[in-house]
Amino acid sequence: MKSALIGIGYYRSPVGGAVAPYQIPDGMLLFELITDGAVYAPEDGDLRGAGWVFLHFPGQKTIWRTDSGGHYECLTVRFDLSVETGTQGWPRAFRWGHADGAVEFAHEMLHAFHYAGVDRTMLGDYVWSQFRYRLDRFRRSEHKREVPDRLAAVMRFIGLHYGDPIGIDALAAQVGLSASHLHALFREHVKISPHQYLVRQRIRAARHLLAAGARPVKAIARDVGYANTESFCRAFRQHTGLTAAAYRRQYQVY
Image (cartoon, rainbow, N blue to C red; front, side):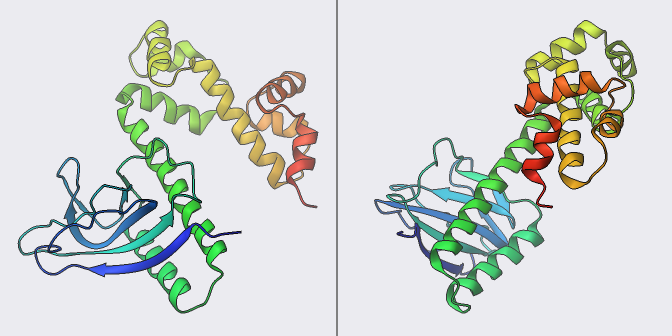
């Protein structure tokens, strides 16, 4: 199998940034992960520092401008677009997460590619999956920032208390909304009702408990807010396509 990974490098700009941007040739996809300093984003012109990832397709130009007295450093990762697919809808820039984690990842991958002799196909798959994972987390965090404060407060409460009896009227009253207004906010920003959101949190917690331990299904049902085990089993199968017992068998090794 041909590896999509072409190469991993590292760039330190002179003071004031690069002399000129580099134009991406046909068939190449380039990631630049900022590890130090700050650089102006190619699209909106905002100054972005360590932890930001820039993605460049053929014909686009790399980052290169920074403050007159500043500089930037970045990990560069090149992929062969004829091999790698699934980049539709990727933004030009997204945040990796904590800057320290981005810097650690950058130096580990540079070492793995040039010194440790790690298999290139395996390394490419790992780096690619990391960028996809970080993009997904970035999108989730951006979506949360777009949610109105009172709706976000309700979602946080459900995330912490999904195992307790929760009434929608009481939830709405906690944040000074009517139940109908809370329903409307959920439909607009989350695309489901408050009750559906609560059920999703309960089923998500149940999946974790089933895979991570041996507690009886009846006990797990109580833990996630179901007094009736049959109701829990119906909801679990509806959301996962599996019974609780089948889910545990599928995801537990022992």
